[in-house]
Image (cartoon, rainbow, N blue to C red; front, top):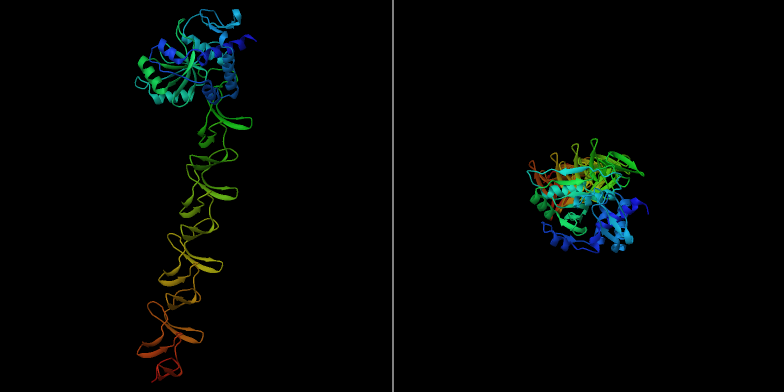
Length: 474
């Protein structure tokens, strides 16, 4: 085993001594400095590191291997201070950890562990400080700072007495490795610290919160801070800012893109985000808006990108988009019990519509198909249950009416149909039968509505004579 490998195994093993040796309670008893920690299990740490560590599965596997190595070699570890540099296997085949600066304290331990994890070629470090707002830290600022910037294995300093190695967060607090500050301190152990507790701790000591090894140039398993913009890797496109993959919605060069929230690759095609559908160009991944022809169907994507369904007004025209999959509907469509007609361009028709040789009338405002009697442009028309306009004789509500054979409007007064003459009420158009009195003349319409004319007819037991115009003679 070469020197560097031994260092890696030793230091990460030392970090995890709490899993088999010293509990968090002992630390709290020895250091009553506002710490309130909870021991955590190996599985809990492994699952967390596997998700958050280094943005790299290789590094996550390495950390897991270190943990397992330590568990299998618990009795071989001791801590030695005031040494010049490095770590080695000492007497009795026990691993000894030596401080690289020859000094003591948790800061050096945490920094040495962090640098060993990252396989740094030197022991200098970069740092990032979280600025105080009004002299104090807020819980939300800490959450945003750590979850946006920190990586598993980096060194954080939280008060004058303790430096920690950050392992990750579950959204409620952070998993850390804690260290004592002098030779009499207990060995390191893994624990969990809530964000509420961490906020109170920082504000109590009035100490700057600093993340060390931040954005440091490290090996291939660690973030490259010079990596920025859209970058294609292994056939997928990713978006980097200061070396970190960005996920979710990103605004790039005046266009919106979506990067997978788990793996970070640029999504294309249809995606569902917060129960809304979006379409990302299949070539460049940009979010599409407006009318889009996708797989030979038209869709409308809102100016903010989500797919519209139901009624849509666009360019002063109404369209209907399928409520299940959003595609534009054409032809006849029953919506909430009413029929509508959408032309080949998807536009809702209003007014008169000729379809397959029949005439229909669609409400001029709402577009719904009309049935029954309708007053249109001061004329009455009748439409049957299927919406087709009727012509000729029609019986409605027990009465007969006659609708113009060409344009379908209801006729009134005298009409001639075939060889017969009929009279339709001047007001409501229904056909009259029996005696009628018009312009000082008497006429008689038989039970079929036809006018009697040019001859003698017996009516109710009496004989009457009508001239060729149907007028009563005597």
